[in-house]
Length: 299
Image (tube, one colour):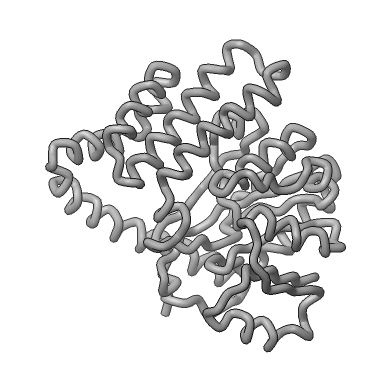
């Protein structure tokens, strides 16, 4: 297995940690870049492996994740991208929620079914054929890449937790939620430009409805309940049942506009406790499967 580290010129002590393990790295660099897309492309240019991925510094692999992905690629030569389920964790590594996905295809990704980036692996050949990371994107750049890869090869879902995604107030999908919403619109425009000739007329309502529902979620996370409700309304006109799966979010947006969101906060805290307990038990079972006894936050 080959390890490559690309650091954006950190001044927080990261370079000292990198140098500590430099003899185990195939290559590393610490220098300013124009964003995550350029950093990933820079690392991939030095990768020699047939199977590649990237892991952001906040996130973790669970035991067995890499070998499970490799097994799928070896037994399914037609597969270009493998993804698993994930768990969100807080700053201390305590599990918060399980992110479970379906056995999706390219058409599902077109409809803005989102998979968790740390739990994704791909063939380097497909990454390169797709043109690598689009450096013009800063928020939805991973979904933009999945669309291009899945348009050329099949994708495969492993129904097991492969990775942990860190969730905190400074995480990009939290602190820049509105940026994700706006860039979702850009990805929708890309689909219209790139894949129009491959998409049936009746599928456009599914695609647009999926994009609008995702925008509604991001606008709400970004503290823009008015924009969220507008997006949910337009999504409902295209995919009513799919949109209503976010009924609790729509209600929260309505109460936020009325200054009454505190009525839901107690319910959400109660549900959050239930999610944490379920997530912790699931992760514990996952670790026991691979005979691994340690996990930050789980005793």
